[in-house]
Image (tube, rainbow, N blue to C red; front, side, top):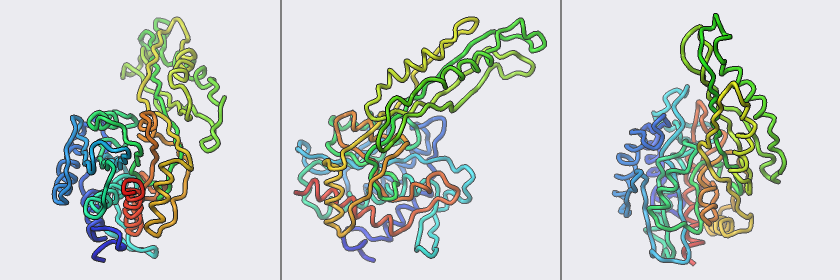
Length: 389
């Protein structure tokens, strides 16, 4: 096909080749998060040269996020497509960075780590932005960003992008694989870090010490007894509270441990007060002497919610109809991503993109070529519907 489905100014083979190139450049989550050199080099060596070759204006903010801006600077309407550079680690996936095209009874697929979650949707969004630049009379502000985040569980990169823009877009599409459905709402999250300290001693004379593990057991029992089910969301259900990590020190044999660190994942519903959620856990964790307990507010993400008949859904649904596609289905997501931050900033924001959500982090992650094209066409439709009245 010279042009993907006639609606795009780029060919299907180009979108496929972009996706393959993105997969072949590893950009996994590491302990360095957004500052991981492979994530930074993915943007610098893969995305920037492509954006330059496509003739799109671009810049990078102090955190390394890429920004492309089209249309009038001061416009009543603004739309952002926010894609991601960082992926889940390769883990046990065979040939995670080969980026091969495979065939099965359902057609052609691109296979590789991050392709169904971040990198396929990134390619689709870039194709849509290039098409808008080539063909559409964009009368509002169109922003395309590639965030250095993707798997971090925090809003740091989104905050940096927002600061660099100097405004909050009216609509913000979180470009990620959702099986082409729009997430009307997603939970937020706060990580609560509880450190229990005792006194070390030889385990042959445990009465000489204060065992931090025993204190941590009491903390765990008390925190998990906290009632987080007081409210219920019609699409998301109840909030949850889950222990996700335990570690003790000193890392030595035959030693009563003098420090244990626990991490609790407290999911937040739209409207929940994160400080109140944190305070309830901190109060429960305060077990008193002979232990010392410190509770910290850790990584945090806002919950998100948009109206099924609001501006975002009208633009997405109307845009799909323009392109001869069915309006996107909707769902509710228990994960947390950057939609909540932009909702907090006053935008309507939701996750939406090509790529099967069930493929995320899997050992055979792939995306259908037909979904890549449909995703790009859907984004073009939304841009035209909202920014080209």
